[in-house]
Length: 206
Image (cartoon, rainbow, N blue to C red; front, side):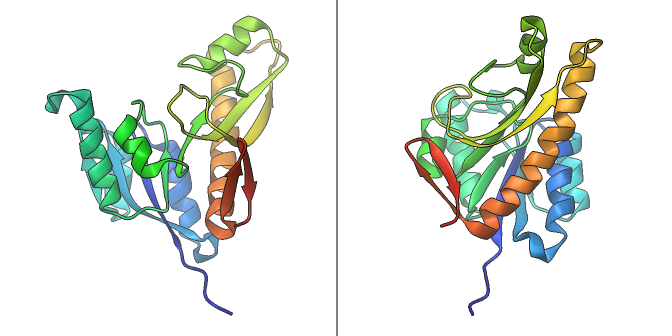
């Protein structure tokens, strides 16, 4: 029986990197089936990069302001990611939208999380919007990024009850816990089992 190849992950961060840390902890077990081969960011001096450096993982940074156009920035991010030959690219709190060049290179292999149950409450304020709407449950969604905003095919979702005394901060903290667990579980399955996307339906297994 052939040995399964370890899937290569490039993880993109913009801040503290707690989702990155969860993936680093998971990939320490060879049975997980994936390894983080590089970490990229759109700003320097952040804890997410420090986590990668402490783990001995290569990093790269492309700041939008260092490029003449957004398209040039997108091309630079694409080239750096591609140089590590990733099987999956994971947005782990990466706060920039991918452009056409990036999506052409990594379409169908670029994953992101969102703090709501998509397609409800897309955009920057998923937890706040859900709370304001008065929903009884919300949660987190892992999806394959496409050219829209939080519109790509859904890989997995985790449900989080909304408590009567929740504010945005308390709700978002509980969502983040569920999000990390979902991200680690799902990326591991995608790496070990493979996946297909047909008619917006993501199915595990190659």
